[in-house]
Length: 338
Image (cartoon, rainbow, N blue to C red; front, side, top):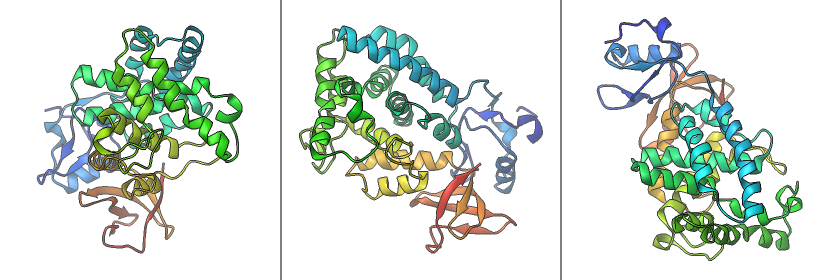
């Protein structure tokens, strides 16, 4: 029992999911609490005094990711010069930051922290590392497996150190020849990691396979299904999500809800359905309590996620009425607002 009032708990986060009597997640673990969360808990008859809370953390996800992005830039330069993966340095300076960034996720902190505001190339590696680590935690990987996955995800694009800047940063669409060159970053990454001492070959597979797809439509080899390493499938989900929700030199960021809809519908190629479904479900749970704009111009707050229609949640509108997007197909979410 903590005995604190909603005013005293504002900004605090719970160490575990807060659920109602039916097992529905109302507030995901580690989500900073706002007034709307307490209204939700009261409506569901949940006594928050039975939960344990932690005070707000000083650093934000954006601060952590920016710091790690600057560090990985130096790491990649070292890899280019010494032609080896500095695994110990990565374990000491990058992984702790990635883990910390996943310790207190809410949807706004995830999205704002991971958006590429400066150099997409380096922030993308950290973004994919953070998202893959979140997925690994949701899959309940043990500590050693999670460390391997996090490192592999952070190094998934290391082969791009052998792609020229004029291609990496091209503001327009690639020519067919340029695209073929870009695709070789998967093979370059595999070779760099395999030629480094004391680095797991599974990390090399992730670098090689993160653009492969379940239906064989990916590259570099067009393999499918069980031919693709499980960690490569996790990183593929993280890679697509971060890439599509980030602003790059040649395109604007795609809205969060449009990305998850297309991921669910195979719009970016066939992803592992179990991993993709878990990712979308947990990300939508992180959105509970966030304000959204609807296509009809109204604003509301996400109150619950339909487990059978993840991307169409229950919205409480200004004034207290509710709109169930899974039942009302004429209205959709345009964007998160905050």
